[in-house]
Amino acid sequence: MSKRGYHHGNLKEALIEAALGLITEKGPTGFTLSEAAKRAGVTPAAVYRHFEGREDLIAEAAFQGYVIFADLMQYAYDQGQPSALQAFEATGRAYLAFARKYPGHYISMFESGISVNRTPELAAISTKARRVLESAAEDLCEHIPEDRRPPASMFSAHIWALSHGVVELFARNSPGIQSPFDPEDLLESAIGVYLRGLGLIAADT
Image (tube, rainbow, N blue to C red; front, side):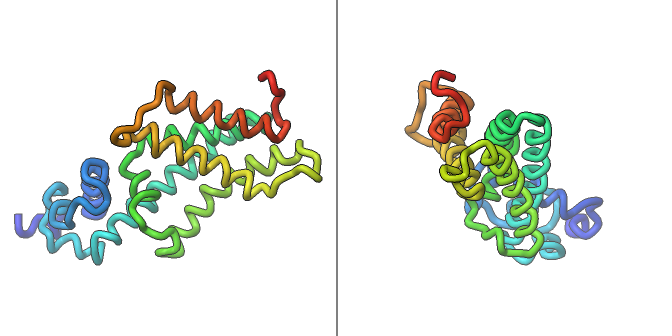
């Protein structure tokens, strides 16, 4: 066991996978590097071949999460084309789908306290993911009279905040908080109210 950590076939990935499981179970501050090493089947000393500390490990999990997230958002946006409305709504649903399917990554990205500016690589991939939603908002903004058109960055930030709120309150089993509606229905109706307010969909839709 003492030498296994230095000959592990894919030590870095094994540690990240172990960390993702622990983050999902215990939260980003609820585990130690030693626990991650034990779950990965390596020695604690082996962790430091790739990571200086727990925050570095979580940051790498966040980076991987943003890569997946950016691809998922782009796929949703592309699938909604050529309708600007369908592409925009699809990106909102993709946010919720990502949070459900990749809870460890989601927590690392949005609940760990790790700054997206921790590394240039993390900043770049988080910007790429955000840019997909901004592109969808820009497409929709073209259908709003210029004198009533919000900045696309504000538009996308509102929807991001709506999506994040639904995930945090109703899709991640927050203690003591329940809703009689499915998170998907809550998000869809909230986006609908927002878009009706901008005149992008009919009031009776």
